[in-house]
Length: 150
Image (cartoon, rainbow, N blue to C red; front, side, top):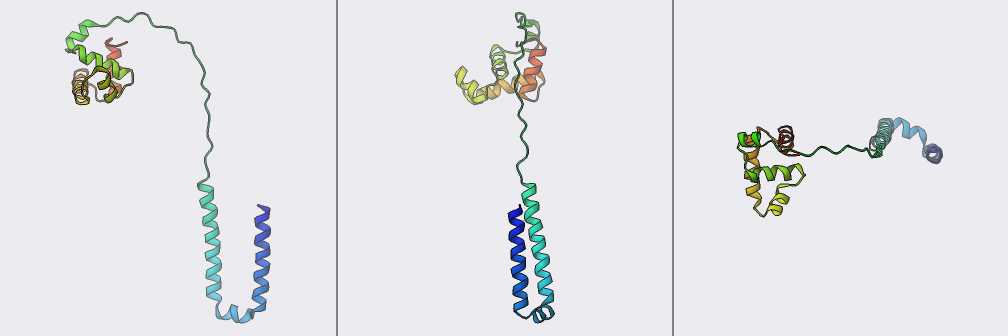
C-alpha cells in the first residue's frame, strides 16, 4: 500500500513539473474544463476500481467440523400392513418408496429393479397420489410416519 502511495506521489510531482514546463497559464485558462473533467473522471475511476475490488473480495469461509454422535439403534421395524392395504399401495410401489428413501434417483431405481425410467415415474406418481404427497421427500416422510418404511 505504501509503495502505491509513493508511486502516485512521484507521478503527481512529475505531472506538476510538466505542467509548469508547458506554459501553465495557457493550459489552465484555455483548457480548464477539460482538466477538471479529467480529474473528476480519474477520481471516479479510482473509486470504482477500489469499490469493485472491495465488493468482489472472497468472503470468509466457515469450516464446520463434524462430530460423531452415537445414535441408539431402533427396535425392529414392523410394517403397518393394515395401513398399506387401506391405501392400496402395491408391493412394487412400496419397493420404489424404499428406494426413494434410500436417496436413489429415478434412473438409479430403474437400473436397480430392471424397468424403464418412465415405469418408475409412473409408480412414483401413483404412490404420491396415494400418500397425498407432492414431493419425494414428503412421500418418504409420510411413509415413515404411517409405518410403511423403516
